[in-house]
Image 1 (tube, rainbow, N blue to C red):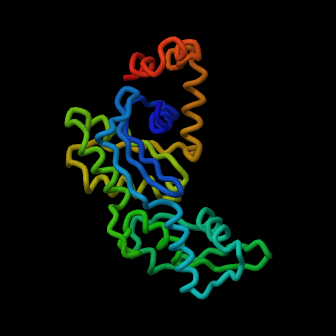
Image 2 (cartoon, one colour):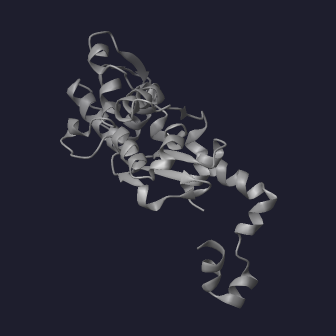
Image 3 (cartoon, rainbow, N blue to C red):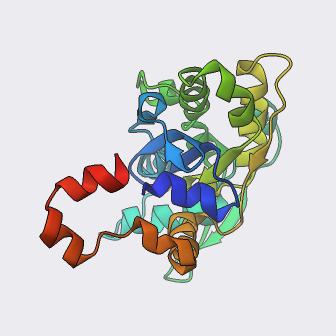
Length: 236
């Protein structure tokens, strides 16, 4: 049972492609009838921690230096509170994009264009000189590596999971980018559950509550009787 399937199941799907982006890594994992397709899973090390680091750099360029050992944690909180994904970063840069953030010591910080420039890194890793794929490309390549007969279902069942998909505007931007990557006749649907920070846990909890879940167990007695062979009998 993979955490990808748990995220998919939490959204009510047993078939789809999960884009799971957390703090340290991002995966795109196609699921078909409850099983991940290992040959189609794509990974990039571009994730939330990189956005936090880039935001810290941008804030310093704007003249903000927090001078505290807790700087990284404060910047992470600023990221979660203030940052958003733009559909048109060039256009946003031309307008007032500042937001006031109250620091733990009570002082106020004006967060400017770093609000949208930092998370733009997820789509444009070249901003920090990296040659990674953007996460929309990771998603697109994952679908393209899947069997042709499955691709239509995958495009129609894109599931977002993980804390780095919680930026305001993230779902709309993914949809925009996927329209550029997908075949013209593709129907794109994106599920962005509001509780997706905990999708893996939620899906696992739902599965564990089902009466059929016991069929996925290996009991102590079974393992003692059969040894590792029981894994092959039940799951392979």
